[in-house]
Amino acid sequence: MRTALTGGSILVAGEWQHNADLVIEGDLIAEIRPAGTNMNSEKYIDISDHFLVPGFIDTQVNGGGGAFFNDAPTVDTLRTIASAHQTFGTTALLPTLISDDLDIVAEAIAAVDSAIQLGVPGVVGIHIEGPFLSSAKKGVHNPNKFRRIDEAAVALLTSLKNGVTLVTLAPEETTPDMIARLVEAGVIVSAGHTNATYGETIEAVDAGLTGFTHLYNAMAGLNSREPGVVGAALDNRSTYAGVIVDGHHVHAASLRIAMYAKGTEKIMLVTDAMPSVGAADKNFILQGHEITVEGGRCTTVDGTLAGSDLDMASAVRNAAAMLEVPLAVAVQMASANPARFLGLEGTQGDIKAGMRADLVLLDSNQKVQQVWISGNSTLTQ
Image 1 (cartoon, helix red, strand yellow):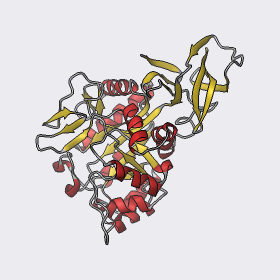
Image 2 (image 1 turned 30 degrees about the vertical axis):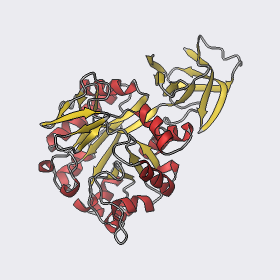
Image 3 (image 1 turned 90 degrees about the vertical axis):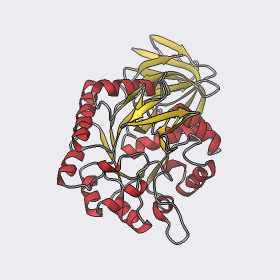
Image 4 (image 1 turned 180 degrees about the vertical axis):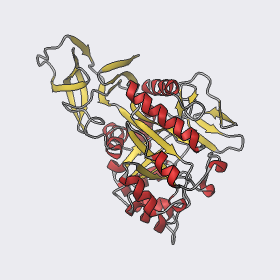
């Protein structure tokens, strides 16, 4: 069936086409034309006074809808998490497993494989955040789970048959050769929860590391004589940096500095979302720790930040305000940039004829009104 969305402002390749029409045919975008053109469609939806943007792609989602991936790494959990985030415009995500035993990692990989085979909307791979991390920058991760990457770990980390595998590790806890092996096997490698030096981080980049997980948070900072992980991230414009733009994790000035250094095309919005997103009961248990959610902050009893209560639609609005960029640029950070980082730019992250019809309709207040994943509408406000 051909469905025409008519009369809206459509973000096409980063530029607004105002008073335009778009046709969805099957799971793809068929065409984009000026409004009033005969679209020869069976169904018409008026999107006047609204903004149609590419679906948001979140590379770091620990939970949502009251479900936490580590607690139950199953297809049902993935359905719950993906559905909760679709409400906020996320049309593709990487369910994220924080540091755990390798048998739990194996269960999580198997669940993602099955979810993709079954066509669970929104699941495009897995993010394995640890357990190859630094105790010095553990954050809320359990350091008792931390370990070095050995041959068994390599075999596991490269075992996903369907979708994308992203691994966050501490460069100082492995070797450039091991990073290169993972990259050669198709794994995307990112630095996070790391106390590496600038030199160690650049060696990892030279070995194929391409990302930085929640830039500034849980990593060695920028100093005058030791630029650290943050300095390496800011100094290198070939890599991508995920940022949590919730007003709690990173100061707005630090976010703008990162954008100025790396360019808008290398900054990705991530949520680092916990089960509280899309859940009526915000508080939750994280690997035995009580997490309290107040004012958008998820914290342990000692005040340590434990992920976020952020959704992608809010991240886009926050980015526009805190980074002082137009809406189109904020959307780019939530769609086109993560698509390139994950190697999905040929099918997702933009609005063009032939691309997958992953779309988000925003009202004048930039609130989500409707979402399409592969041409299927998943939400009407």
